Length: 155
Image 1 (cartoon, one colour):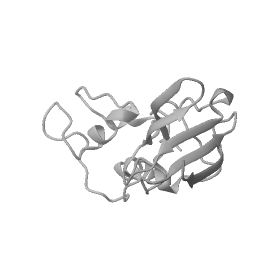
Image 2: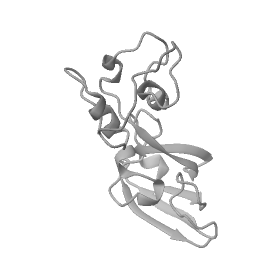
Image 3: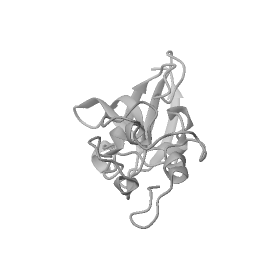
């Protein structure tokens, strides 16, 4: 999902889109012109929010917060690459059939038919689907970017 593209945007909505508690403490950008760690602007750095001052809530119009799926091999000659998914899913181990996979952190371009099968080596990182290093994620993606199957197996 994405934040509203017009009208009022509240800090609670921005927190929720990022997968955080709606009442999480977070200043807009902090006390300097450079967004500080823990601020909403810094949190959305990879989601396309401008990191240059001055900052306002309108910078979040239409923004979708994404999570990263790291070191994925997919398609002919692609990989390892980072792919992205909606932050509301949580850690990569929660990915399931029907979830959409994107090639950009703004969640604008989903994977298409050229990227039918994806592979990723497991690790304990929150950016990998299989949490055991002995396993590998094997997933299939539809032409609309939706996962049609996802499993962990030994290579």
